[in-house]
Length: 313
Image (spheres, rainbow, N blue to C red):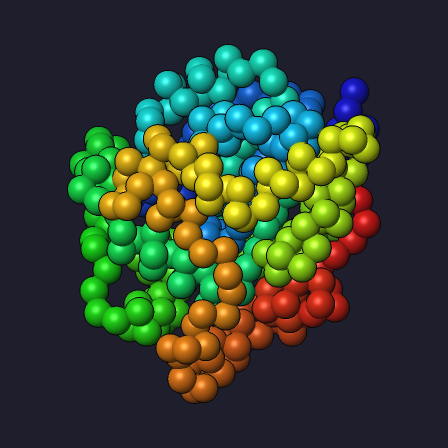
């Protein structure tokens, strides 16, 4: 028996709702059959998701240069392709599976059998990356999300107005036109002390990629041979991922004008400082503290430099 299964009843989160929109079908998890060594990478979106998947893939393969995370690490709660097709493909995988979710915890089937890594990033940086993702999406992207049968709720439309307008709308309407932001962060932060969850932060990955990769490997229980670490770190760098973007972007980047290099964009933070006013930034910071509390808001803004969120594996 997995030792985590011996925890008292109720110690792990229980799913309490479903979440549907142009992207989501949370019911896919209801029929998912977990294995004892499964890994789930969770984020809100545009928070270092693919980066974290790349690091995990590199750790699991000892630094193999041809790890195609877009193919082998699927987004489970994305409503396309259909549930049955997606689940069958995942079940057929024979390697140690590492999967992706953008759900808040209460819409997710959270298993004591899996290991979870939740990656976060300051919401202002999230929006700058999201706008690039959204503004460069092509007709194929909109068709897949809006026209595939099963969509619940309104379609997603092309972005309008300036980048500042886009941010202010996202802030005022809590994640519009994608999905709510604060509940996602809050739900994962609330379970941060569970033994099968590791929090990571975009800022920490940038500041100390080797150290964070080793922390992830320790958490996953992977003993990496010392001579494999140089390749793992090289292939987990932003420059390497940008140069091999076709291995990270869904379907090789066909959903974005400009190809996969648009999906792997800049990998930088703080670009919002050139656009947002001091009042805009202050409004975001005040909302973060109201929605999350001071400790979580500090972690979201700064990572471990904010004095919270990090624990030893």
